[in-house]
Length: 270
Image 1: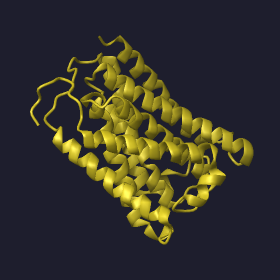
Image 2: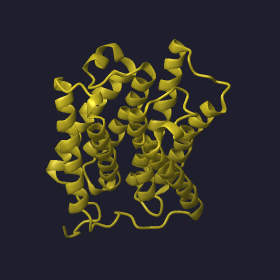
Image 3: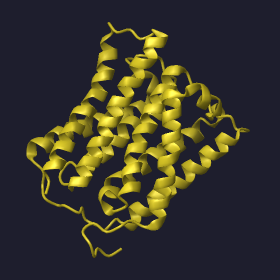
């Protein structure tokens, strides 16, 4: 595709698929987060309360990112969001295939799951390729202190996400609740996805790019922490004296802090 506009509109296909996706993840996230008795029986596999809350938070975060592209269907913010959707959905599809025995194969929700997680990454991959030659809509460099801050997040979340996928039992021991290998590998998307987005806005980015990524990070950190606390109020199973619990909370707190910085920088971009 030839670049004729610094911020051209995205294709109708990407717009419609992202709009549909934002509706699906909103339903899933809101349902798991607040209406779990209704949504859990429909889910493709069995979820414990903490896992349901965590997944709900991740899907609500996905709704924020996809919803922004659906509302502003242009290269900025699609430049940041579409690669994140590709990474997220491709990893979820891979883990679903590797652990297909964990899914209720005869359930219509499982078939819908695979339709979505085959179709959406294919659509995302096609558009990443289609727009591969487009430069960021704003190529002005960002402050060095900001680049260093984001680089710390990118390195930390990339390495931890990869480690969680490779050895989930080892690298999830400090989590506030016990997770199995299936969920550990699935949860690596909570770290690799924001790492990809943060990398894309680490050196340059438009006002929309920065605010989109900042809001996405803030949403993930806030939803994950609130979801965990609200479930523990009912379950009372977390060990709040354990250092691991606070390290886990700090990871998502870091997302909020860096997200606030991104939003602030975005607001200052002209």
